[in-house]
Length: 168
Image (tube, rainbow, N blue to C red; front, side):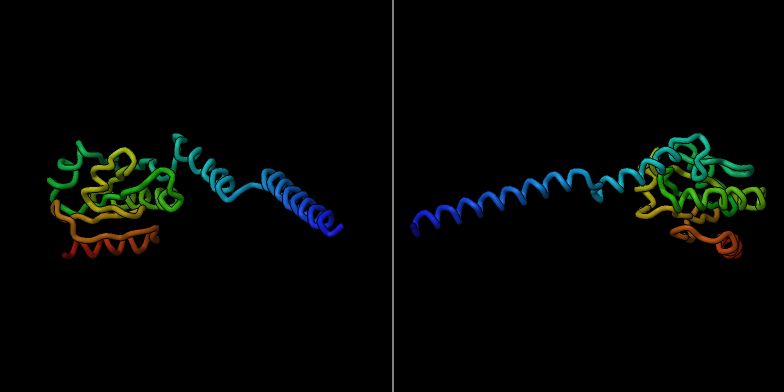
């Protein structure tokens, strides 16, 4: 009789473990995972990044797009103060600051040279300038790097940095 009770107890334990495992497996399949939530959030960013009117890459009056080809002419050979905004189209901070950069370029037309560089399409330039975080604004005077601002900044802070660089 004891032998029968042992086998029954083992059999019941196996059935319970299997049942719990099956229930957990099926219940987790219906719940969104962290990866699912991240993918869903990124869908919106990718849609905006591929949109023609992406605020990060939109070019306003008085600014221009920079890449490997025109960088020497537009920045290195330029005599004066220039700022290059390194951005990624999918970066929400870049999308936020894009219109601010455009407004600065419009307001300071002729005083400073303002450009945007897409780090996705010009990865060698991002590597050359050791860009590890975007948005990154690099300030140049007479073709030489003199200062940087990393991260989304207020318009007044960027304007103050441009003024500071021009006095160096």
